[in-house]
Image (cartoon, rainbow, N blue to C red):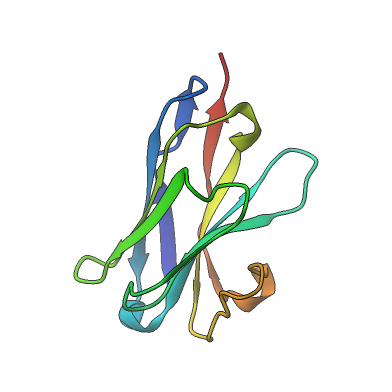
Length: 127
């Protein structure tokens, strides 16, 4: 059974930083694309970052490009999301997701392309 467990969420002031972590219990971690999605209150789930199985390429949505960085450690089955210059509009539940399918970085991330999901970790940006 595949499990994804997020951690690192919390409350932070605007302009602050947080680092989210996702621990994956899967034997094929190094073959999966890994992504981060978020759902803000009253909004649809949004794909914000994704990383190639080897880490050689990444994707970011326009809303987080230049502020967030996704990375992975295949030796530890971990994926990370470094979030800087946080804004109140970044307030959301953040989800880690994995996909054994090819994810085209030329298009926006689609949640139905990902087979594995964590339970989420809450990020609140407020003064």
